[in-house]
Amino acid sequence: MDALSTTWAITRTVAGAVWYMLVWTFRSWRLVLACVMLGNLLLIGERAFAGYAVIWCVPAFSLLRAVWWAVHPLTYEAVLGGPIRRRGWKRRLRRNWKRIADRCGLATAPRVDEARVIPRLRRVRASGNMLTFNVRARVGQTADDVAAAAEAIATSLGAEAVEAHRLGAGWVELSLTMRELLDVATLPTIPSAIEFRGVTIGRCSDGTPWRLDLAGRHTLVVGRSGSGKGSVFWGVAGNLAPAAHAGMVHLWGVDLKGGVEVAVGAPMFSHVAMNEADAVGLLRGLNRVIVDRQSVMRGQSRSFEPSPGDPVHVLMIDELAVLTAYASKEVVNEAVNLLKLILTQGRAFGVMVVAFVQDPRKETVGMRDLFTQTVALRLASGAETRMVLGDGMAALAPAHHISQTMPGAGYAVTDDGVVARVRADYWADDFIRLVAGTYPAPPAPPLPDEGVTVEPAGTEPPAPVGVTLSGAPPRPRTPRKPRAPRVPQPTSSDGDPEAA
Image (tube, rainbow, N blue to C red; front, side, top):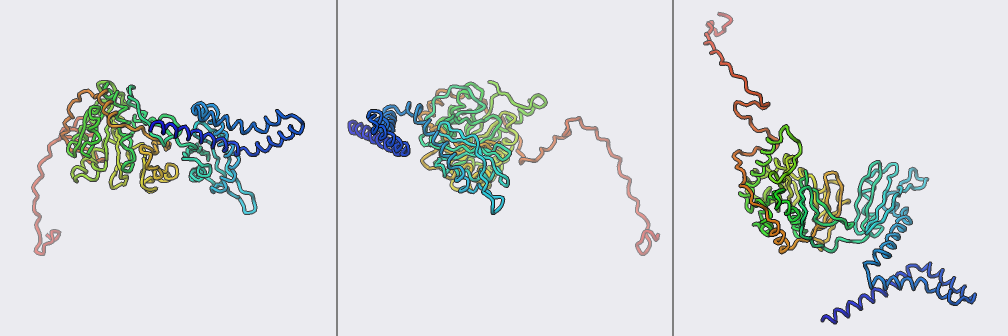
């Protein structure tokens, strides 16, 4: 069986080399025709060697490229294949830009009898698998009009995906993914760096590392079942494990699916809740951490700096909807109020939330707008994409077009509107256990006792008796004089007191 597989691999490689040689030769048919004509002239002039060399130069060069590609594809791609391909992308864009802009609805005509005006094309660049260029909107157009046509432009050029970035003053930068690099999942390495401001959990569409910022941000990850939310979950938790082991981070885990997700790497968490009662208690404890830090930082500092004895707290919630919509009414009410307090007040005090959910509707996740950055994995429809990422984002970040064969792939949108097409590394169960065993969290103190009830978000807590809201000592109350007894007035016989 091994000999048969080896033979088939060699045959496929040779067939591929022959195919590429023919394609590259006939693709340059104009150059081949010119070489044939020049070679025949040399042959007529009794320059046989030079004539045959000119005639066969293009097929010989194609054969050299095909052999190089088959023998050592890595060096071929870096030295010859990649530069030739990127040059072809730029030439094709410049040559066909007027027709592409016209067909994609970007050409405008001031009057019926005047020529159509094409948006300006500037700074065409190609690097790696990306083709990037700037487009200047014409009079009567906006940057949003150019961004809305980005998908049509990418389709015209045969791109796999497109990202649009508004540069201001009518300029839009379009980044086209010409060759897909995210179709193959990558595996992570055992983390070693102590990070708490952000973690590298995968790669972007251009091959660069995908770094998810955590400092001062709350992250909502939305995706259908099987979209790869576990890859993002363990990408965050696993890369924070060295910092948790060093005492710089406390990981809080909530898994109301019976603990099947968190239990695999439970040693790296300081606190874990696997049922509704424990989840509410965990939220109470985390809210108590915020209240305690408020009293310490008040008047001293507006930004939190972690230390080994005073760490960053990261709350990770798997399947948020179970806690905010599907649990009992009492649990939902208290959990929602606690989460709103944590999301609105925790950022300044070193408390971040990373939540995962399948159903992005407002009825399920009412505090959706309190998350400052969003990761949209594979979604069911364009309506869900607009729910998660906002109006107008279905064209810029079409998460509903992600293939089911690419779990962990999605679009990351930060609070400043920057969109990145990404894919998280795949974390296997054995690798999660290995990381958890390598970096277990130190023993955590018990949860603080939250003895007060939580008021709904947006309401002021009642002031204690004897203390004013401003903090000044209360004025002593002066006793009021007793009210004088009321003397009845005489009345006349007809009941009118004025007539008496």
